[in-house]
Length: 69
Image 1 (cartoon, rainbow, N blue to C red):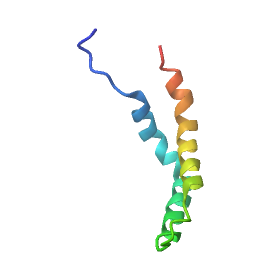
Image 2 (cartoon, rainbow, N blue to C red):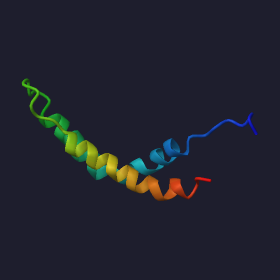
Image 3 (cartoon, rainbow, N blue to C red):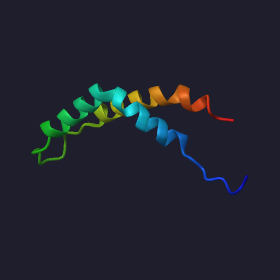
């Protein structure tokens, strides 16, 4: 049993779920473009980034926890 190679199910499921979260990703990328030339560093896209991560995690969670032993 120790010789079996570990497969990270979370990474696999994230790759599966990312295409389902296109809208938050587009909003995040649009924000990045919008603040691209901002020199003061006061603007950020943290909210849009967290929205994207939330979407991916919401998709992954039920599938991942059903695989946990």
